[in-house]
Length: 466
Image (cartoon, rainbow, N blue to C red; front, top):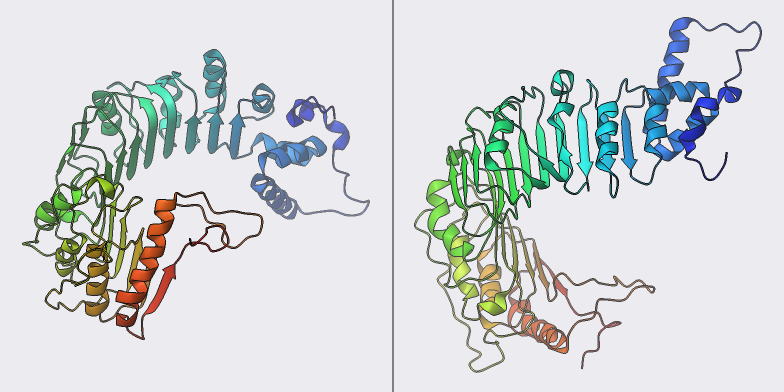
């Protein structure tokens, strides 16, 4: 085979590689022969695409299997015309196009050839400004497709689009689509179970109709023009929203089990609003760039909350935030089992436990009988953070694991000789060593013998302790 040709460029000329006929006197019953062919076809379908293409060049049996291969991943650098010419389109269920820099007429032609009735998964990526044709979603395709993922293109569904009866997963990333156009698509997708929107900046108002009775998961990330989400799906239970000043209206908030919010002052909002409107939450993740005020006392409890993650990504913007105020969150969550805190302080601006008075505040005891795992990343010598850790080890009577990591999001060498930890500033390194000292002086002796304490210190091989 010439090295300049795609493996499939010669598939149609591979008759000389036909398998040998059975030896004289050997006869296979049709049912047994069919079983063997099914097995070989299944093995062929599991091969990586390049290997499967080469095998199809060597055997008529594999060539027949190739023509009915159920999954294709096509990239712009491949000989796509040759691949599609040698595939019958029959049996194709999973198709991924990664176009890159190709002309739009080619894309239209390839989609018309490859997207046929019976397809279940269609993934289109990196086709900037390409206008995805709704005509591809023919009657037969709409009756079979269950997973549609579009990335970096234009998608303009209209009310004339017929029903996508089996569509359960919809993912749109950097797609030009308006809120009205998306509503048209959703109204025709009654089987939809999960939807993810990322960087879809033509959507200002997202309306999810009540007819989506199967929808249980909604992810809306970095849609910067979005102002309001009105979701009336009755069985929505998992929501992940990243964006500032988005008005969120949920038709059935009592159904909510998992919630993730990322915007400024979200800690205060979560404490003040969520317990009363989403009392059945089991998992909560809240991330904030900055917090203007401390966490308030909760008037209503999170009776079922088991997993809590709190992150303040730039805590230097909130030097007055009192980490100990987070105790109100724990006290209102009697079922809490795991807690992850990341209060990043790359340049220490909070009052240190080693500056001024070393007296630590004491809060009234409040036993936590369910809390078993606590992890604090970016742990520092901030006095309020040390006080919070002391409160936890004193009151979490069932605590099994406590991990205090003096770094966060830094690449570590993990002790491997051919790797080095990422470079860090002297201020960050010095604060990490102060954090280790604070753990030894104020926390270590308070940890129960039944609790495993793990302290992640600076790497002594890559970082000097000066």
